Length: 135
Image (tube, rainbow, N blue to C red; front, side, top):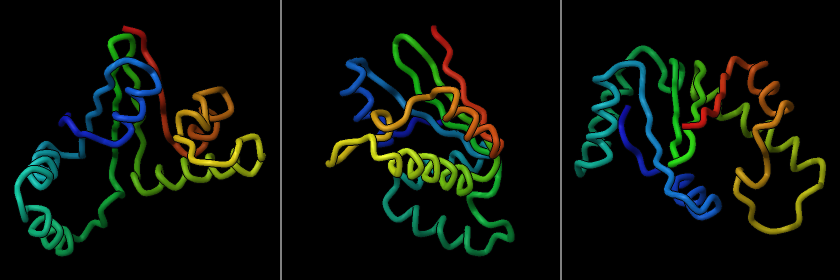
């Protein structure tokens, strides 16, 4: 796993009142290291983008894992097809928005949707496993 400063880390730290760290991992250690390098070395992202265009497998189709950690708990989600996983989460969020239970304005996902049975069932229908483990 590689450390990543996803925006969720900042918003969750504020809303939970505890430091949150985020990490990511790709199918291979080499790919994870390449993405990490691309985020830290100027112009490396451009080179990796060109290499990715030459690969036969589209990006975002392999297995994925994301974790979030606080001093009190560790959460993770995993599935296959990062792009599909993103689409599933957008669909579940849109369904919640369509219910009209939110006030107008900007809302972060952690305030719009809980990891309740309904959300977990929606994710599971699409092969996404989620767990929150207390430390």
